[in-house]
Length: 258
Ligand SMILES: [Zn+2]
Image (cartoon, rainbow, N blue to C red):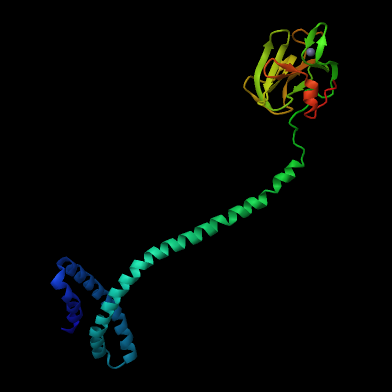
């Protein structure tokens, strides 16, 4: 009889007002009552062991009282605990953990690894512009010659000497050019300038190929209008607008001797 009293008291105000809410609350009360019973069962064991001789009566009287108390306590605690706990626990835990864990190691790693490229710079990278055929004799400079403009610089070494790209770029022509150039290669350096390498005995690159400064693009020869093995080297400021290679290359750290 006493066991039912807390349930009835709790439901009394509801009966006059809301019908569906009453059934809901009753279901909850039953569940909570069951939970309280489980808790009391554990409590009863504790009482029984400490009480010694009188386990049965103490357990029964406690059962009614404690259930009523536990019922209301549990009802309150579940409402109070479930509501604020889940929103506060989830956001506070994840933002504090993940940013501190991921953010701190990443900047320190990049900061410590950045000094390394400085050491690489001391290992003498290939300059932006290089001599296309180092050690060659200059046999003709840019300028008027025999009534016509000699539009490049002639560099002479034995036939078959490797010819190097003066700078990085993309090969735009590679083959037998007209106008007496023989086997010639054009490299577009992407800054409005092109370089042209004529009279080659053999070409080592293909159109569209990207080359680095100093890369071998072919071998010196005497193809086309040529009186002997030499490299005819031109600089174009825009295709077929030849300029004097000597000051151009000198401004880029390469002395071709003209
Ligand atoms: Zn020439």
